[in-house]
Structures are given as C-alpha cells and as structure tokens.
Length: 418
Image (cartoon, rainbow, N blue to C red; front, side, top):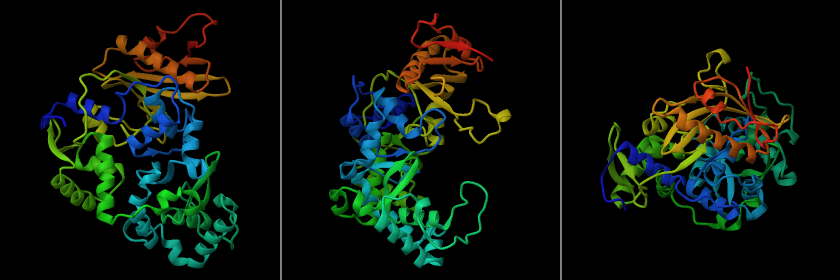
C-alpha cells in the first residue's frame, strides 16, 4: 500500500503507467504466457476494424511487450475451448478474459429483456420473435456462421445510409450476441463467425457461479481500479461502461470495504480513488507508440487530466480540417506523452509512412526525435515493413529527418517527400 493520501500529477501518471504494465521489463521473446498475464492485467482490450496501420486490438500488447507474434492474440481469442479471451461489449467491442464472463451475465440479461439502453437493440426480438429464433436455430445447426450466410424470409426492414443500416439478420445476430446466447467463435478476415456460447467458451467459465448484479458490478469496478491504479468515479465507470447510478452505489460499497482508498490528486476537480495494491515507481522509462484505443488513453478526459494531452481521433474529420492527421498515435516517452504521429502502413511497398509528426509543448524536439525514430523502427520491424518514409509535415518531422540512416544498404530507410 502506498502510504499517502495526496499525490502530485507526476505521481498519478506513474501510478497509472505502472498499473497498465509499462514498468515491467519486456521479454526477449514475448510468448502466450506473457500475453495472458497482460490481458488479465488490463481486463479489457478494445477491438477496432480500422486497418490503416494495424488493427487497434493488436497494439496494446506491442506497446507493452514489444514485437510479439499477432497470431498469439488470435489463438488467445479463438483457439477453441482453450481460449482465454472472448468477445463481448465490455468497454466497446472488446476482448475480455473468459473468467469475466459470469460478471457480465447481468448485462446479457438486461440486453435480452430490452431494458434501459438496450430497448432499441431488442426491438427486433419484440417485433419478430419467431424470426430471431429461426436465426438462432440456424446458428445452432450451421455454426460457426457469418450473419451474411443466414437464410431467412425477405428482409423488409427500411434501410438507412451508413454503418447502422443493418439487415434483419444482422440485427437478430447482434441482439443474440448482446444477450449472450451466441458469441464469436472465430473471424474470417474481420468478419465474425458466430456460434452458440455454450459451444465456444471453456466449461469452467460457463459453470462458474454467477454473482448477483451488485456483486458483479463491484468485481468489474475492482478490475478497473487495478488496471487504472488511480482514478475518479467516472474513470472507473467508463472502463466497463457502467451506468452512473450503478457505479456510484458500488463505489461507496468498495470504499466502505477498503477495496478502494479515497485520495486526492493536485489539480483534479473530482475525488480520486486508489487501488490498495497500486505501485508508485520512482521513475518510468517507457518508449512506445500507443493505439488511439489503448486502455491507457481511451477515456479522453482522463488522458487530458493525467497528461494535459487533448486527443481527438480525426478519421471522420474532413482532411482540410484535420489538425494532426488521419490516424494519429500518441508517443509515450518516460512518464509523459511527448508527441503524436500520423502513421500508415503501405504494405504493397513495405513502407511505414509518417504523414505528420508533432511534438508536445513541454517536450524538447531534439530529445524526442531520436527516441521516436527508434520507436518507429520497432514498429516497422514488427509489421514486417522495410522502409520508413517521413513527410515533412508537423514541427517534429524535420527533427526526425536528422535521424534518417543514409545509404540504401540500411535495413530501414527514411525519406523526405512532399
């Protein structure tokens, strides 16, 4: 236990980084055991489809363990009943450890009944219960199966443009997924292949006692507190997307039980809560790039509060209005977010493209540039890319160019271009 009740912003950052696994020595060759330990520490790994660089769910392990084989994550989530991760809506669409399954059953029950925020999701079950059951029966008979392979009556759902213009089959599958009756057995590319939950999850997870709603929520908030180290109530609530009325009630119970310790952080307007097992390292020597959806930074107000780092993903912003770039990764150096860099993997030309690089106001570009270039080199090697191409956009780009290796004989080459 850390013997104090008030913390400086620097101390809060170091506690958070330690809790997230950034103070552990990287293994020489990350293996399945390293990955399992890490995902249990994090509690949740957000899944995202954007593949401009690499899909976001592969990044947290790279940021903490170094260049691991991404097949290890695939095996962890989809290797039959030996899997130790499964997919569910925990934060967003996420991988979570299989032992978390009983703690999420209450959410599945609420989704099945269509209560509260799940009303829209369950509309198809109210409107077409027979159709939903026929879709479920097809999964039972034919699974693992993609939503697009299901056979049913003519879809008469009015379509709307965009991502949410789902077919009836897709709506039925999402409802069944949220309700916990089916889950992802595997993926084909990025497409889910569904099967019955009882045929997918390990027997131990299925047979584990199911806590009541309050206890399950306490357990989820405890996982969040261990992963965050030090946090406000909204931080803890956001980790597993609990309702405010639920998280506030559970917080009071956890404090009374001594599972969370009330503390203060200088400059924070809200009370903070400390995991009793949290560590406060004297120094953090991290040097890594972070996914925009890394659990260290996915709650944007917490990121701004901890690091004075305002981050907004600009994928959906018109190009002319983007400030930092299309797919921008924060760069963690020591215990600070020192830069942000727009990245793209040009797989056809085996090149890591750096369309823009920006340094934070507190950081010295002369100190940041060589460390960032080394991190980019690590990234390129992990992705099997042979070159790095830096576009002179952003105040950090010229400093990066100074560290470009010369000569075509170099394994990694950086070029400047317009």
